[in-house]
Image (cartoon, rainbow, N blue to C red; front, side, top):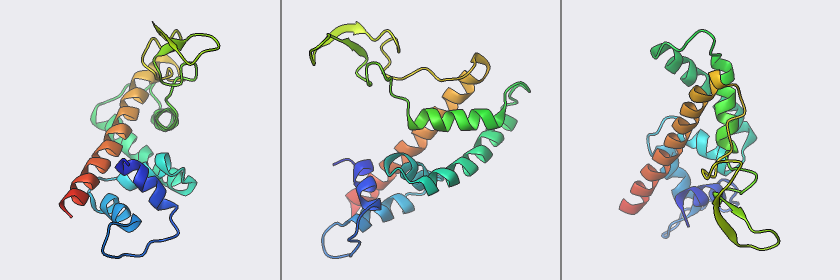
Length: 164
């Protein structure tokens, strides 16, 4: 089982006892201690569907986006609040609704794929960002940053658990 899946399961665990073998507590602690800023919030929001963490992430993410906008001198027409909201909403649900992430059209009434790129997502498996072109590039970059935080958290936790 992947670390992210173990983390999602552990957040809903009713048994957090520590004993001689690996437990849900190990995974929770590894994510918390991996040293990635916002890592636990990002994973709890996406993997555990934790609404409380999502609200906290939205507040913290607005600060991150504002800092990036300032440091990279984003144009005045780009709304930091809008980019922050769009990037989180997109990151939480970025799968193409037509091909469900398979990147190809499906043959009608069969489980088989045609091999032709999905017409809705152009074969990316991801839905288009639902905003105007002025904000789309910035929102996509920030959604990638959320992905990087999640990946870094999982990777760091896996390293900690491997050395255990």
